[in-house]
Image (tube, rainbow, N blue to C red; front, side):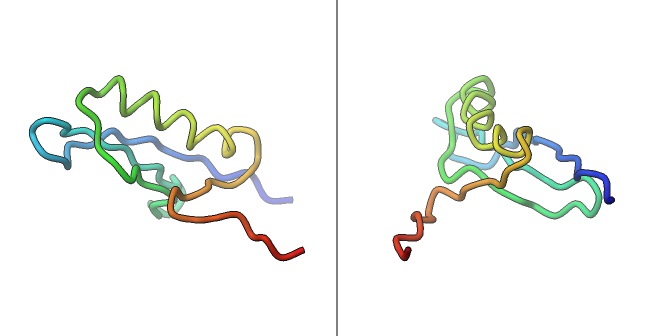
Length: 75
């Protein structure tokens, strides 16, 4: 049985000066970016709060949904 992956959450400066903060979720084993915020935020706290929503499925053993993905309607 393999061990579950560990993830890092990184708050980064990458937006315009009015909303400079975004977030990235990175798999710790191989530094692969799993998800990134689609928008930027005016404060680190707002970026962190938004990242919690995205990271919650990982903490519960699920997968991260990307904002641009739509649910599969086939079935």
